[in-house]
Length: 252
Ligand SMILES: Nc1nc2c(c(=O)[nH]1)N[C@H]1C(S)=C(S)[C@@H](COP(=O)(O)O)O[C@H]1N2
Ligand SMILES: [Mo]
Image (cartoon, rainbow, N blue to C red; front, side, top):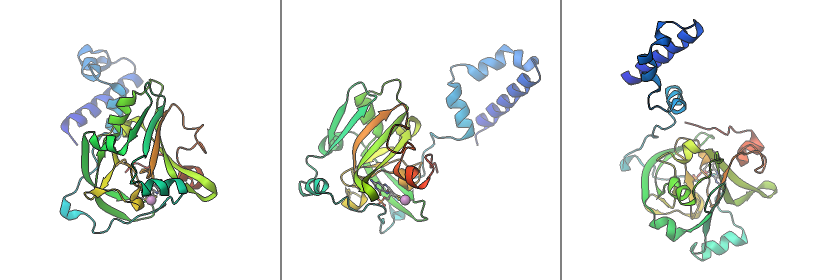
C-alpha cells in the first residue's frame, strides 16, 4: 500500500474523530480540509481507499497460457437463427447498443474489428472451481458506449445473449459503470490469436476481468444501458442471479 494512501487514510480517521468529538483543531484547520477535498472526487477517493475497483486484473505472459481453454455453460446456442449466422460467418451479426443512450448504435463484427483493439492475457475463474489463462482481443466496451453516448440516468450496462436456457430463458448479465469503463473490459472477438469459436461465445463476448466467469456474457447481440435492473427479466441482473441466487457483484 502506498504511503500516500496510508497518509490519506490517517487523514480520514482524523476527520472522523474530529466529527465525532466535535470541532477540534484538526477539523477546523483550513489547510487540512483543502488537502482532503481539493480537486478530488470524494466518492471515487473513498471507494478506492476501501477497495480499488479501478485496479487492473493481473496479466500473464504468453508461456503461461493454458494449453486448453475449456468451455462452460452454453457451448453452442444451436438455434436456427444462430446456426444461420454461423453458416454466414457472422457477416450479418449485429451488436445493438441502446437503452439510455443519446445515439442508438448497431455494430457489425467488421466494424468492431476496425476499432482500436486491446489484447490481454488473463485468468478466467469459474465459480465451479476451475480457471484458465487465455489471450483475449477486441475493442474496449467504452469505445462502443462512447459512440452511443450514455445518458445521465444510465447506471448499469446489460448484455443480452443469443442462447436460451431451460424453459427458454435468455442468458443475460449486467455490470455497473465502473466495470463498464474499466480499461480491461472488452468485447472479445478473438481468443488466443484466432477469431472466437462457437464454444467460447462467437462472434463476440464480454470480458470483464475483475469479475467471476459467469459475468463474461457470450454470444452478445444487444447491449442496453439502464437506470435500474429490476425491470429486466427476473430483476437480479443476470440469469444465474435470477435462478440460482448467484451474487450480482462477483468481483475478484
Ligand atoms: N451467453 C452465455 N454466456 C456465458 C455462459 C453461458 O452459458 N451463456 N456461461 C458463463 C460461465 S458460468 C462461464 S465460466 C463462462 C465460460 O466461458 P468459456 O465457455 O469461454 O470458457 O461463460 C459465461 N458466459
Ligand atoms: Mo462459470
